[in-house]
Image 1: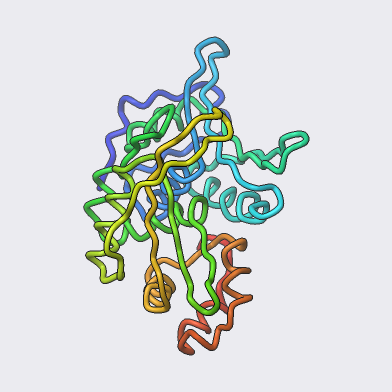
Image 2: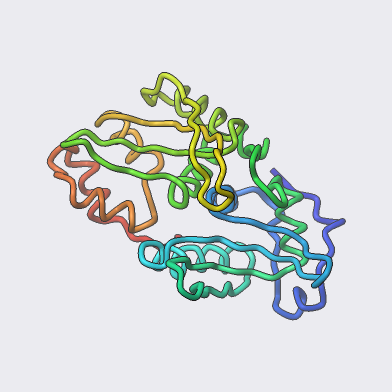
Length: 251
């Protein structure tokens, strides 16, 4: 898909830094939007006249992913150097970009500005099998979890957006993943000290993990470490080789 960027305005600082806005859709752009959807945020703050993009992670578990993989992806896509900083007295690491042109571009290609309670997947991604796999890869690296009950693997994804969970569920089911449905949970929101409704999708069992290895996989080492600790003899040799040879940087 080709994007018409005629109305995307760049700031003087964008031009000075050499900001590049992709004119064509790509798997890398779909993955970046998945990352933003998982743990990202963008907005315009009029009181400071600041166009801000932030992606958060755990400073203990996501440092390599944010500082190596995501910063490299940002450089490749937009020719910008992202900064990262750890929040004082917190285990929180933030990747930050300040760019008028990039914020307006990301909104144009389908990312929701502000709060993401009912965020969905952009149509240009949802209509492409390859783009959907790339989007889910970015989403999974930032907002999925994997754990085991004995030797039984479980990949789970939770979001406040039923639209998002429903779209991911429908696509994975269409691609042969074994999942009956997603479900609703009520959680206590620590930040706001009140109940919160979330939607959870779970992929249970070895066959789902095999399909995940084949089509999506992970780039974030926090997930790869958990997989490595599990008995890889439960996977067939092809997927074991994929695990052992994976390089966590974009090509």
